[in-house]
Image 1 (cartoon, rainbow, N blue to C red):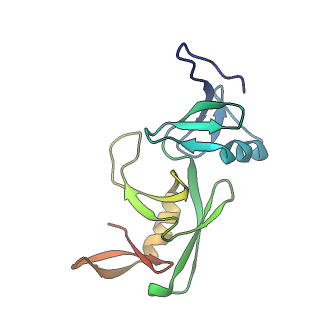
Image 2 (spheres, rainbow, N blue to C red; image 1 turned 120 degrees about the vertical axis):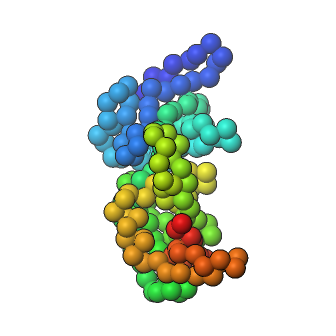
Length: 165
């Protein structure tokens, strides 16, 4: 992972995470999952939206096309307000959807303008986009709930209601 040092002293690694959550180095996918997990463990996102790999020795900027993680599986326990949803990322990391890992709809960062897509916070300032199949599963678990005087459709998890519209 030889960084390139531009004139301003900032390092840029020739790495990117594509829309499907695949990590690439110099245009080629990184095939070794333990290496991808190692890189992901030092991934940070700055307030300006830039992504960085940060170690005690150096830091370098990387490109992220949409979100650094993709949610590939969803599990549900309970029902209604007692429901708890757990999401698994493409890097086999599980999070419980709730106050610490909220679910939201937003427009994608890149690509053609489209309908809002579902995302969940995986780590502080790092999110995962739900695969379409996982989103459909989520919609099947949904129910209507009065929120701020408006009847909304969404899902419950860990005692919190997340609108899906």
